[in-house]
Length: 150
Image (cartoon, rainbow, N blue to C red; front, top):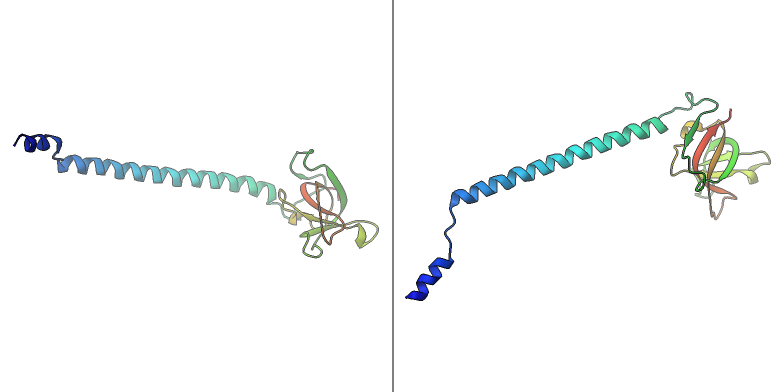
């Protein structure tokens, strides 16, 4: 008989009101955390959209001589070349190329992980970048900075 009384003391009777209050608090906290996550994601996404639109939002007609766009990192983007920027790569390498004196063998084929090159098509530019190994292109460069010359 004493053992049964000891067992009763170990077991607790939970009140249904306490449980519903705890559940309500958890649900409210859950929704606050979700709303905070959505709000912060929206703020960060709109802030990045403003930055990228100011860097790449120039059309070719608004790009003028002397315009410089891109990275200031001269250690990473140490190679440079000048020419008229045209669309198209060679053998699946590059989305653009610089036309330089001396014919097609002097073209520099370009990709860019930093700058949108499309506003500079048909412009004479100087590009700074990092030379990459290529299978088809004579010179393949990842462009990090562009200056409009003409």
